[in-house]
Image (cartoon, rainbow, N blue to C red; front, side, top):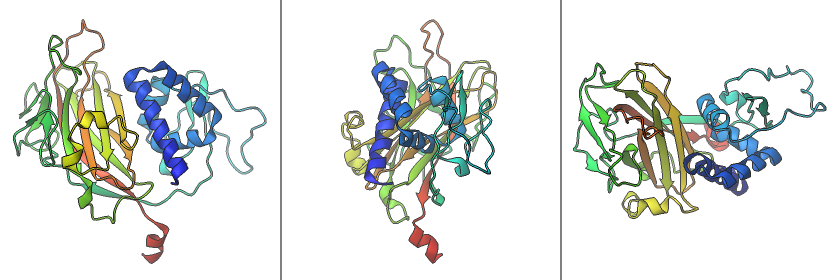
Length: 325
């Protein structure tokens, strides 16, 4: 990934954040125009949101872009099968860079001829990933690594007919009362990871992290929405947490935030994941997970549970390393 492609990735991520989290209509217009006019941006979107669920959520449900079908003069290359435009085809690593989907009556497409690099998955150590209550919870953002911080949550065992997904405990995300004067009423939890200890030779262009977490609701039939956000900073964890929220608006900070709709009526745990591209020099990763309150103020917020948080480094294997294997 060169400097230009990194800048394009960052621009797409900033626009997605503005559209999704801030409902910024000028940003929506700018993202529409960028994806219409620039094939490279469509390829970047396919790479950044390569898993099927993320693409469906971002492109179809949010209505970010609406592209017309390709002109009649565009034909499949000889020896290839024409794509089935009327059905969603899951994106796999072999199809990264090609976005084919049904968005109402419109289509998103982008064809890229590029060699897909080899990627190794390396688990990263999350402190107390099964939420067993190894250490007391901190109030709000933790100041350093080695703890969970929460806005409104507590460790519990089996309750409301729900058993932990992994281990003997889970974290109950309790609703924040609407009358409480806070900026954000989402029940969120936080953890800070130190990327300097990675035994990988450092972060290089193309490296990503994948954050996975499992959620469920206390009441069956709850219309649930969950949040996963990851923020990468070049500062050390101690420095990064000083005035953290203002730093998330800086151009040199990479942040991806995604909301997930749970399957209605599903009683079991549901697992969601998010990918974040890492910039070379990234030293700190901040995880933000939680339950999103109902948009309708007349609907009471529900209790939710969080368990089994996992983080993996998706490490690009340089050509020189592969040739020496």
